[in-house]
Image (cartoon, rainbow, N blue to C red; front, top):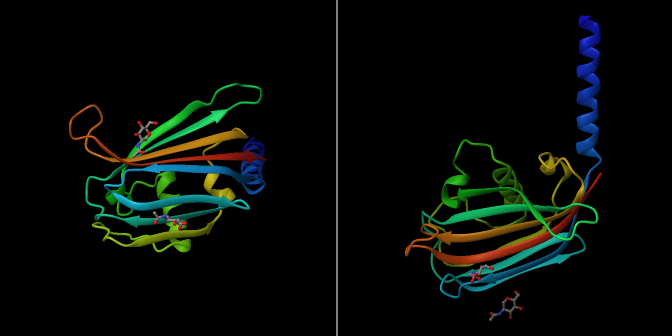
Length: 178
Ligand SMILES: *[C@@H]1O[C@H](CO)[C@@H](O)[C@H](O)[C@H]1NC(C)=O
Ligand SMILES: *[C@@H]1O[C@H](CO)[C@@H](O)[C@H](O)[C@H]1NC(C)=O
C-alpha cells in the first residue's frame, strides 16, 4: 500500500518536472507607453525571443511606486484574452519582501541581465535590460499552454483617487508551449 502511494507520488513529481522542463516561452511582441514626467525615454523591444529595455529616469523612483500585473490567456480559437490573475506589488518592497512571488523570481532573474537597482530610491539615470529570456522554470504557475498577454502598469497613489498617477504601461505577448 505504502509502496503503491510512493509510486504515485513519484510519477506525479516526474510528470510535473517534465512539464516544467519541456516548456518554452516565446516572446512575440512588446509595447510600452510612459509619462514624460517620470521617464525621459523608455523603449521595450523583443528581438529573437529576447527582451530588451532601455529607460532614462526623469526623477528618482521613490517608495510608493507600485506595479499592477495582469496576466491574461487566450485559449485556442478564443477571440479575446481573459485575465487569469492579477496582482499589485510595491516595487520598492518586492526585492526585500520575504513573500516569494512569481514576479519577484522574474525580477531576480532580470537583474542578472540588467543594471536594475535593488534599493529605492532608484536615482535618475539610464537603466537597461539586455537579452533576457524567460526560463522555463519561471513559468510553473501557468498550467495551460497558450497565448499569453502580460500587462504591467506602474503608478503612484491609489486607483480612483486624486493621488493616482500613472507612470508606465508595458504589454508583452508571449506563447507558452509544452
Ligand atoms: C496606460 O494605459 C491606460 C489604459 O490603456 C491609459 O489610460 C494611460 O494613459 C496609460 N498611461 C501611460 C503612462 O501611458
Ligand atoms: C529613446 O531611446 C531609443 C532607444 O534607445 C532611441 O533610439 C531614441 O532616440 C530615444 N529617444 C529620445 C527622445 O531620446
